[in-house]
Amino acid sequence: MSEFEYIMANDFDRAWLNFELDLPLKPSEHGVPNPFYVTRPENPISELTDGLLAPFFRPPKFFFSGHRGCGKSTELLHLMANLEIQKKYWPINFSIRDEADIIDLDFRDVLLAIGGRLFRSYHEQGGKLPEQLLRELNSWRGKVEQETKTIVDGRVNGYEASAAINTFFANAGVRMKLEPASRSELRQVFEKDITGLIGVINNISTAIYSREKRIPLVLIDDMDKPDLEEASAIFHDRREIMMQPNCAIVYTVSSALFYSKEFDAIRDQSIFLPNIKLHRRANIEDHCPEGYETLRKFVQARMDLGLIDQDALEEAITYSGGVFREMARLMRSGIGRARRRKATRVERTDIEWAVTEIRNEYRRILDREDMEILKKIHQDNRLEYDNRFKPLLQLLAVLEYRNGENWCDIHPALRRLVNE
Image (cartoon, rainbow, N blue to C red; front, side, top):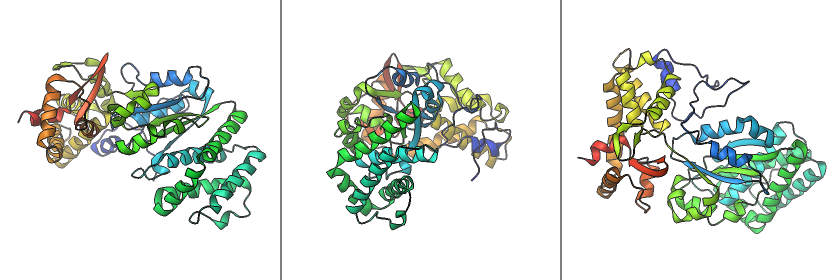
């Protein structure tokens, strides 16, 4: 598949592509900014940037979260391209989806992914680690393979140490992700010697720092996908272990963890990426011009505004709730309906149809108790920390905003539903 091109659309076909729902935006290249990237009001990612650039005694760890679709992946990519970050750090970014099964994720899987990605990325970029370290890593590899039956691969025999280790990490990662038997066996091996696995990460990190004079920085995306129980097991129960690697790390974590008592484990290093605020608290008619302009730019960067009626655009912004992914979803649905009508532009009726589709989806999955909670939230805009509240946040039925203090409201598509 060819690489995505960031071209403003002049027709519905190209516009449909440009509003792809899962499209993290690559950062600028050669000083030219990504034309689809929109700067958020108050630059909320600056808190994470400042934290990484601040002095420290040990490489920092941060826990980065936000609602599904709020743009976390895009912001991590742009953080990685920040020139000050690149001067201080040797950064790598990867999705845990590529390294492990996010439906069955364990802290040992994450640690193996960190060590494997550090080694493989440095190897692939032509980096040369010290021979002594390669001998130690090769010895560790051999011990792990001797204690397992399912990941031994005789084809690495005769390889130079660097290639053999690279192959081991690649094979172990694939089998951790796809083969439950191998996953269980490797976890048992690492459980007996978790300090050995952390030692591998630290030795690789130290060697990279020695060669590059920059601290390795690992940005792990999609760690927010596991459910609250798994997230708590990794970041609450095993917090001290996850803080041990001798490199800087930004873990994305489930927003549900921020609304649980287990949040205390990550409180001091937590950063939440808020949604775009479109109205003032307790007053949906009091629009925030800056929020509307941000999402207007989000659309204008992707397609000629002549393809959409301006009232329809305002309607889409209002019903997006200030979530980038929801905005893309409404635009895609509206474009699709306009195409089926053989129209030349998206009209308000197309957006209203898209909003109805979202409302119908919620109607199928929300029960009466959910609706009572949502009605109360819509009335007072207060965050309610209970077990019923957290799933509603993950479903985007409830959206959090910041205006000094944090507050929340229901997804705009639900306003009619709670009043029925």
